Image (tube, rainbow, N blue to C red; front, top):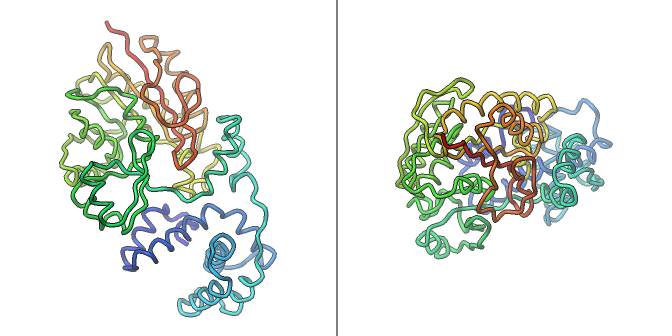
Length: 396
């Protein structure tokens, strides 16, 4: 209900709810599946219920029925079990009239899925970005998101000893089915694993060899890429405008036995630090390439928001470029599939900064297509959609 009301995002809201509920692992997994599944199928679930409800149905009632309809229509739960469970929930939590819940869930039927549950303009964006691969990408958005981890050898042995299964994926990331919640695993507590999507790690790989190099991780957020860089022997300075994110990043680095330096700064203004040979700007974006793992984004995103974010990125990129040493490398990335936030930002930057030239993006194991002066990873099989460009500053 908090997510659909626009009061938060699914991951932190669900984490907080599960921490309070102390559910067994199996029930926590089912709750997670229901939350994300309801958000992924939001449009068709709402259409399926529309003929059975009045237009002024209370959001609490609608949310409960959408979750119940998802479980009935998309999971293998027997219909009588779904109806009984949600009737009891409606009664005990006083979320909805039990009789209404009983009647609606018995009658609700599947309706056709349109444009992979995306608004028309966003589905068209995917089709323009991926061409013949667009249908596969759109269909993938409705599937549960796998857990991707970088895993040490000791971590792999520990996870397998607990009953988890690991399958090698692209960019050296393992696809993991856990036997217990990740944070409760010994491998996580010992700093032997780190969650990261293969496409996100590809942005780090695009820098090349970072061993012993000074690397600026700009708009570093919670510091996951900083951790990946530090693990490869880089001297990392991570910059973000939100100071509290540094606390989470430091805590994660401590868990991993790594260190980095943190700077709080708004990158729409110049940053006064010495230039570095390697600079990564993983810029804030609309997240349109992460809809499988963050399905609530599609319920909120607008074309105006895309334009606003592209303007922000265009202000940040020159300030990032000013921090690149002569002969150095700048990687610009966004987890968005829109041309405005990826190819167009880089094209405009290169027109105004002839001292930079684009280079091929190396070490790409994830599926990808050309996109302007960079590449766009294809969001299939649980890989996110990232635009990645590698730019070289002229030496001297």
